[in-house]
Length: 130
Image 1: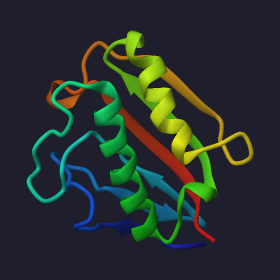
Image 2: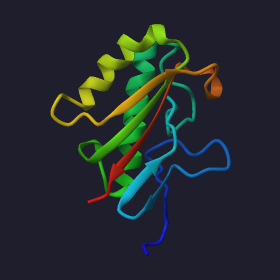
Image 3: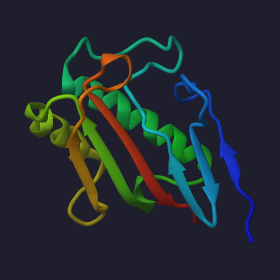
């Protein structure tokens, strides 16, 4: 049975609680939800603009996936949490820059009553580690 490996990278925001950025087990990486924090400053990026927040979230996810030995091309599922479903279109436009019709994994997008640090977007990913 394969061992569980904790993933940690300075290229993505440090965990803001008792959790890891990701874990790899059985050839699959499970990321924590990423929010729009600048990894260098740990400050929220985007000034409340959902598209700008989504862009930083996707950069953070890319960094965590890379540290795990994976990438968006290996994504198996993404979970999208929005503070307001009214931001769905703006976030989806950013998301589509990373996934197109040929490589888009299944996902769900839900409105959450509240997200960490009052952000508008949080996204988690499950991906294969080739």
